[in-house]
Length: 243
Image 1 (tube, rainbow, N blue to C red):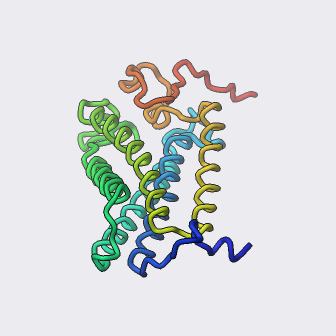
Image 2 (image 1 turned 30 degrees about the vertical axis):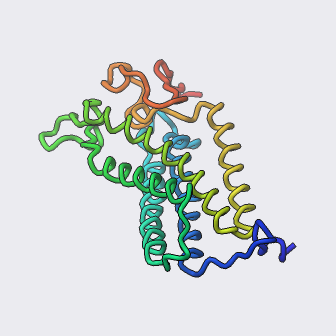
């Protein structure tokens, strides 16, 4: 069993890619195969945590902090992986679909980082403007914030799809050992199964509601939720404290 795990996918071909490409594969798989999908999964399904007394308790930072840690760490690993591949001996680098997919995924990662920096102000009761008002790009859902939401979510899911293709073609091109294929298959299958369950439980909650509650008079609650499969809880009735 141990020999099979260490053996390359194609046992008839050699698995000798050099340390540059070997570590490039490791850090990119960790970034794109593990951290990026985990960050997206947490951001989508845990804006309201299972034990959170929503809507009495609003604006949980668990999803936000976890999402940032995963994505920023993944971005740092991407830079390391890019440096490794650019410093590798030219003869060890092969042109093909993997290179195109990898560059496309990296370009979308840059879009995500820049978009996060330019997303605008938050506003609302927890982050009021300097003049004490509640105004903010997110609270008021200004055109700037709307543009960020659409671009960030679309680019994020596009990058995720490209990264899956890039990781798979990269592992195939490098004739990676069986243990890498097996671990990724288990990890991705677990995320897909959990996503199916949580989606059916209505846990893909609108960001605006998760932060500021279900009051229909709030600016963001007057708009349609942004993103596929995102639910909203307008009309949610608070639980009777006596019960």
